[in-house]
Amino acid sequence: MEKEKIYAAIDHTVLKQTTTWQDVVRLCDQAIAGGAASVCIPPSYVARAKEYVADKMAVCTVIGFPNGYQTTLVKLVETKEALSAGADEIDVVVNLGDIKNGDWDLVQQELTALKKACGKKVLKVIIECCYLTEEEKIKMCEIITALGIDYIKTSTGFGSGGATIEDIELFKQHIGPEVKIKAAGGIRDLAAAEQYLNLGVSRIGSSNILNH
Image 1 (cartoon, rainbow, N blue to C red):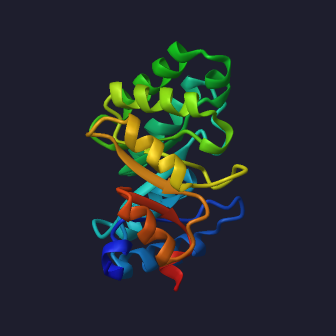
Image 2 (image 1 turned 180 degrees about the vertical axis):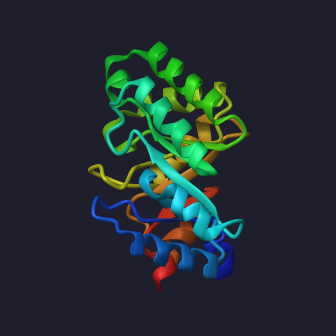
Image 3 (image 1 turned 45 degrees about the vertical axis):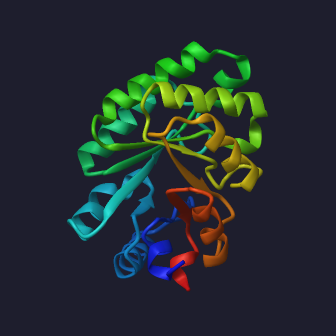
């Protein structure tokens, strides 16, 4: 696979707690030069980053990150503010406690509200696979498909594990044809990214690949 094709699938990411504006500028410059799909940055930098990249690059940000246990109202406020600031894509962490409680109606209600808030903007739901059982992952595939959400995403990169081949294969069996997959967490080089793309993943979350 050509390097440029891999780059075009990357959400070039910097989400460390100590991220500076200069880190974001460097990320944006690398993403533009490499032809990445987007830059994924902290919400506090969205407005400045959107002004900096203009129409050269999509800006993605994270909501309810990295734990997912904020209330739905807080996530909605975060989402609407990010969109108003110019975010093109939203990556939101699902409420893992609701999943573990088996409160599927609450999960669905929250994601329905977030999908409505995003409108035509891209919404990716991070289900943090490392903390879920196979049955819980399957149920999330079903909910995300039913709600017409754009992407299911494996991981935040802040949990106990990242993307795995097994989880991608499981997603492929249980998501609908309109749902895309984003693999994130632990994907650090072109070879690993290519492996996931060959499995049918549409996006790769990585802070490293475009640095080389």
